[in-house]
Length: 222
Image (cartoon, rainbow, N blue to C red; front, side, top):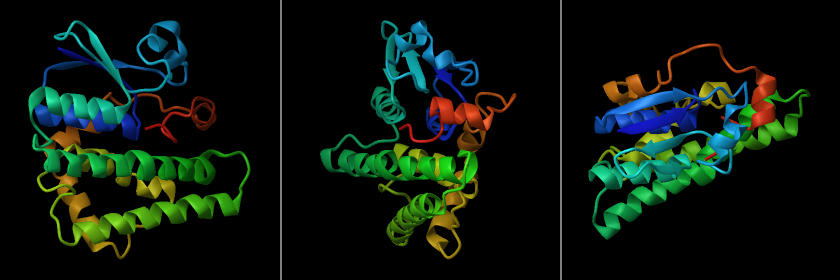
């Protein structure tokens, strides 16, 4: 049984979507970012960086995995699904997964900070991160023009990128004119596992903006 420790952020959704796609039995423990549960000693013992999500694989001697990308790879390798086993196919998935972790996530996260949460408006910072997010979307669009999914077959690369791209409005980044991204986004949104995954954990009181600033969650974490 997998235990998922998570909150309602794009990085959290990456893992819940994957678990739903893989149909693995799992339980959910909601981590309250507002109450700074992720900074408590017991949580830091699982993830020294104090960030969600984390999984504990109780079928593997309670093995804990942190960092959302690492969790996706672990789950894919555990099940033999959502990532090819051949060297080239695996590399292609990893390339687009790293694209999200090193680009899409951090840039959209910073756009969120300066566009939504920062106590003062700093137009150059807002433009910097929104423009870079849009540029990365254009990279996706160019690739998706000739590919149904990011890395051949549907994979953890699609899950990781979509969990962030679907929030583009919140970051103030338009996908107008990106027809291939729109097609892919709609195809992802129609998948039942994606629909279920973005409702985990169940909706409750949202985290106050000032708490997002203090914790860093849902902003620049990978």
